[in-house]
Length: 204
Image: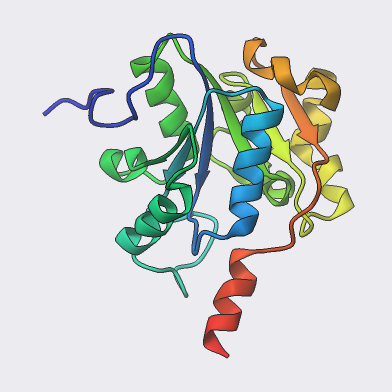
């Protein structure tokens, strides 16, 4: 059966501003909610799609909960939050790469105005992602500050290469209207929860 927007992505109206928030969410925690809520509010988005990954190619398998368990955790976390949706597209496509998801969104939901949303802790390693420069030229990107992020992350290969395309934080609300490449770094109030810390505490 051909892959269609109907069985990959939540139903939305054309022209809506949607944040694409990918991750393993192992487990989902208050820090993830901080990123998603901050992005929705400050980027003036209509929705956040939580794209639950079967696995992260840059991380090992140790300690990773089963996919269904992580997906259930996200469903529970976003229950009652207006405009937040747990999305299984990555598992349905049998891929672990964000670039594949973005390509599917652009192809199957061409009338949307998507923004890739990520925590600041991913900024330092973003240049290791598959086709990261192509990705930067396909959709605007929003980076939400996280306490685990070292200062040097803001001087990462991505930040340096696309420095001239960075919008000031005050312009975050118009990021979804920009033609890629365009990105913003939002020094939102920091939240110190992390999945690594939570997994460690569960083993003590």
